[in-house]
Amino acid sequence: MAGRLKQWCRWLVVRPLIRGMLGMAVAHAERLPSAGPAILVANHNSHFDTLALLALFPRRMLAALRPVCARDYFQASRPRAWVARRFFGAIPLDRACRPGGGDPLAACSAALKAGEILILFPEGTRGAPGALGELKPGVAHLVQRHPEVPVVPVMLGGLERVLPKRACVPLPLLCTAEIGMPRRWNGDRRSFMAELRAAMLPRNLGSAALARY
Image 1 (cartoon, rainbow, N blue to C red):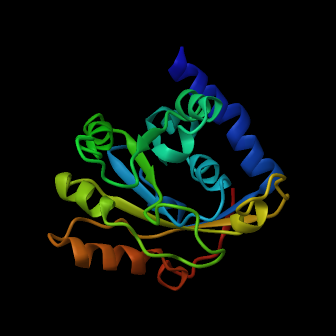
Image 2 (image 1 turned 135 degrees about the vertical axis):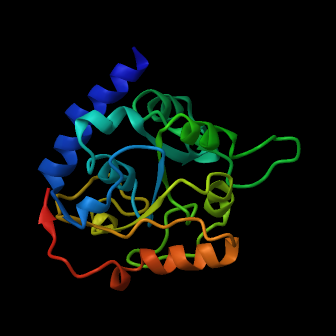
């Protein structure tokens, strides 16, 4: 029942909201994974970022999408934690290692083994509008465990104006998503993160015309 609730929420609420009220223009949609396992990484400026990424995929793939959320933020209140778990199937992740906390990437690793698609924001928190902050190395640790899994970079645009940090009311503005070429584990964490960051910058994502979704 929980899985069906999650799928109907994404299909009847998320997609109409993003594609109807806001509108999405996408470049290189063909680069999105057509099946899991895979990891989608994106810049993070708005609470609508996750909704926008979910809206990029067809209905048949909705059950496989697993957003990764910050445990300390989404589990700070019971209603927020319930929505994240029930409606979005989110995987809570500790942003800081805790002594005796076990393997922080265990749930993400299990999801990839199950053939699911993770949605990650490697900046770790919402950053400055229009700027890509420092990327946390957790994604490199995860990909090192699963070197066969492709990592697809996405640069979202406009969502920082729709619902910026500390705002409560969304504005109906057109948003964009530029999909980069899938990246593969190259054997070195530092260079992998450098390549991933470069791939997430708009100037490196290609100049194809945006297609309205």
